[in-house]
Each structure stands twice: as structure tokens, then as C-alpha cells.
Length: 288
Image (cartoon, rainbow, N blue to C red; front, top):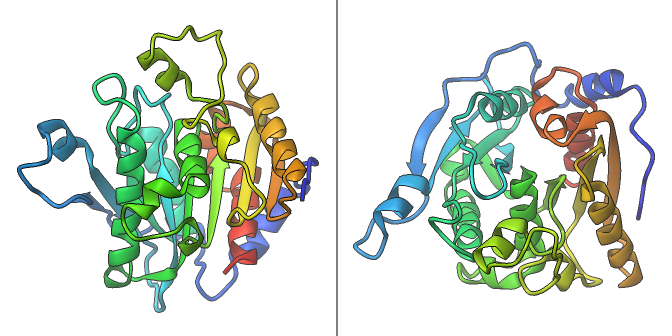
């Protein structure tokens, strides 16, 4: 179902959403994060670069007394940059932990040092690790949500639609409670095209594109994009939603986040009363 209008009174709504049993005050600082946990088993088969990049950080709220819903968060950066430890990403996932979630902030290999589908394989491996280990860190493995901004939104959507990646870990996309791509690329990603020597202005849709895998029976999904998003990005997300509708899919929502540009729709989720984060929390609450 498509919901193109923005969420009104975001601050008031977010305040209401954060009053549940598992959600704590947004003013209470989280516990210190657990940094650089390896989500791939060390073995001679791993490259040095893989060993370096395939790590995640766990953020949790203070005082949690029951298993927490879990967010697996993939940072942005065009698949060519970005880091879980950057100031912006750390601020975003810290805020999500303050909302009452266990948050896994994930690094993955970057292009062109690694090429398609390495970063998708990393994303799937990280999700599999979280499913296996969430309970040991205070999370509920039956309430895991996958989300990410920009390149992270692309990874999120591909894991939801292309069953091959989670399938390598004996998982199905439906084993995840919901997916939240934020301003993700829905055609074949620009980094993938660059690896193939295809000009940025040449837009294609093949097996490396979420649009290629559109079908009726996708897991629950919230698609977010910015009112002032980068060129074509809002249109890509709206077209993706229309393609889902054409396929008979009703298991999704799409929301425009007013007042944000492409970077802000992700990074400003660290703001206490951010409307995009309020939409995300609302979606998670609806699917617990």
C-alpha cells in the first residue's frame, strides 16, 4: 500500500512511540557499544580486506530488562565509502539504541577493492550473525529488522528481494520481521555499473537491481526517500513502489520525508524528533 504523504506532528508521534515497555527515554544514554565484532568466521579463506571490513558494532539502551527488537543498520557511501564508526553513523545508531532497540551497525567491503556481489554477501553474513547471536546480547532473534541509508538501503532491499544471499546461510528473507530501505538505489547500483565499465548516465536493470526482483510476496517493507533527494532517487523509489503495486504486492509502505535532502534523510535520524526515524519506529512497532 502506498502512503505518499509525510507524517504530521512527527515530534509528538515519536514521543508516543517511545513509551512502550521496550522503549526507553531518548534522553537516557545507551551503554557503551561493543565494537568490532567479527561476523565472519576467521579462516584462511578470508582475505585480509575481508577480515578488516567484516565487522559490526552493537549498541544497546541502558536498563533494558527484556529481549529487545533488533535493527541491523547498513551505512551509506555509494558502496565506495562510509564506515560504521563515522561520526554521523555512530550518532544515528546511538539514537536508535536510545529508542529502545539493540542495533548492529555493520561495515562491509567496498567497491572497487571488492566487486559485486561481495558487499551483498557481506550484508547477508552480518544478518545471519545477528540472527544467531542476538539473544546472547539482549536481542530478540524473532524481531529483527534490516535497514540502511543510500547504499545501505540498496543492500537492504536486495536482501529482501533476492533470496540467494540469505539462502547461503539457510535463511529466507521472511525470517526477518521487516526491511526499511532509506533512499536506496532501485536500479542496478552505480558502483556495480562502474565495475562493469558502464557510464553513470547509462541506467540498467538486471539481477543486481532491486527492480529486477519485484514480486507479489515480499516481506514487510517501509520505503523512505527524501523530499529533496538526489537527482532521480525519489523517482526511483516511487517507480519501485509502483512496480510492486503492479506485481500485486500490498505488503509495503512508502513515505516521503519532508524537509530532508539525500544525506539528511539518513544522518538526521540522529535528531531527537526526526520525522523519518518516527516513521521507522512506527513501522517496527506495527510489525513486532
